[in-house]
Length: 205
Image (cartoon, rainbow, N blue to C red; front, side):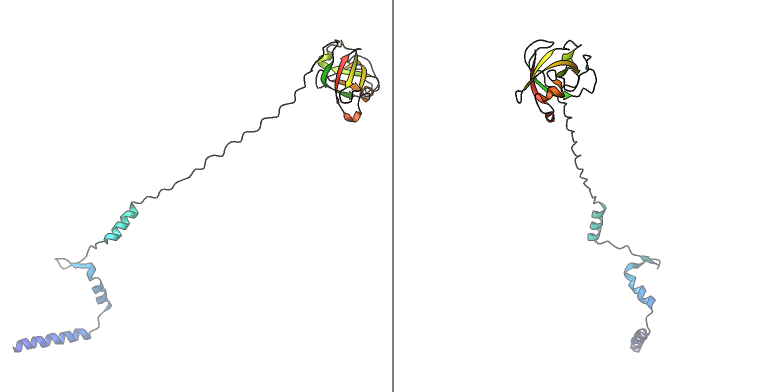
């Protein structure tokens, strides 16, 4: 009985001494590592393997297997612009009637214009003044000069005025075969010079 009482007293004294001795930071650190450490059979400390939280493991696996798809929207190419067709050159109006050479019949569909003599001989070989009543026939109708000296009656279709002229030259710039180029004096007989050109009908005399 006395031995047992002595043992109790010694345990109480040891507890008091342990409570009085301050604990070192190392002891606190060692205690905090206890959940992570395990003592092996030979007495050494080993790091315990920690189990991962199931939710964290699932989230990590989901991130590892997630693939982001980028959709690239390609806009259609703009439609090609087709250039507008080039305007066609105005064709010469065809003669509506009348004969070639020196034949008779009225010719329409042409215009009368005027030109300056400038002291030059015409295609028929004669020099004329600007006020001689002469004309130049379209090249296609003039031909090789068979119309030189022919008389032509010309009527302005706008006002009905007429003039009789003599073929003395060739007109390479007339707009068609029924157009005639007049001297200034001949043009003034049927229209003002400011008009420039007038629609006509004509016939050989």
